[in-house]
Image: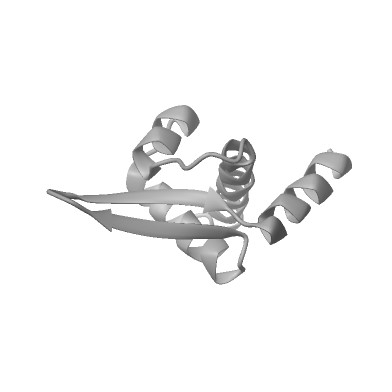
Length: 87
């Protein structure tokens, strides 16, 4: 396993997750996984880290089944602006 390569891919996933959430809507991990051509587990792992940083919020709603919704925070919007301006 090449740690440097995995770390770079993981960072790219995190940035792309923030970009998707930048539209201000709630998204499910499955929606984002399809858009990023990855799997929902990868989205969950990266979102858990982004939530620890306060960049996103993860909300679990329970009806007949558990559904996870993810949204960007104000801090996340600011970081996304910083990322976009440096590209």
